[in-house]
View (cartoon, rainbow, N blue to C red):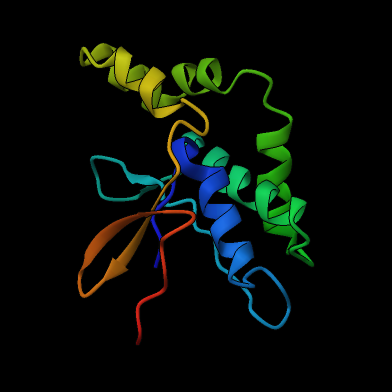
Length: 139
């Protein structure tokens, strides 16, 4: 398992592609995690959809495919969002953060490709290699 967001999307996409993921032989699942509403129901999160789309776009640019309809939709959503920071600031999560005094967090969270870290879950904790050094742990 790998953790990703807008800040490290290209690094994760490069890393997955380098290891041969994103093909019919080695499929990869990219999940836009979302959040929970106060009642516990699922709350889709635009920032997670855009982050998933960014990873998928990087994978596709490196020859990954074929894409599922859902993956193609996430990629298109990312590719067609001209100003990701403004879009996230205007969505439910961004508004909630701003109202809680964390508007700066939206800008930080949407800094596209600000990191080359690829956090890989290893023995119950995330290891923080880069896209050049991260490796998949032995199962």
